Length: 141
Image 1: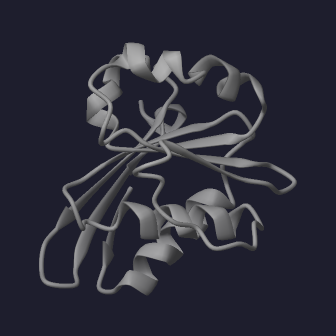
Image 2: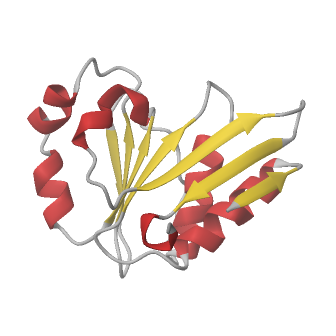
């Protein structure tokens, strides 16, 4: 699925749409350059999961937890050098907790993802426009 976003609000709405449709235990891997809108998209995912709190990038904390009926675990892998570091911080434990894991800078930990990972690629196509490509493996044929 491809969505063209013309504002940060559109990017949040795209995330909200995905958040409302994902199952507990889902992993969402986000890709995109600095400032592409990954955190805005995850803000929308939180809204779609009915989580009513301020979502911020966990660049320095590595992971932020947002509690709700289905919790959201928001990872930022910008500072990690490998998948091993992700496992060192308890990746397996997060996967087993039944929440949704949303991972920014997924290219840094690509080998940690299973084949059923939802992938979201956000590309800047203008000053405030983004191309958001969402790949959900179950929908691929």
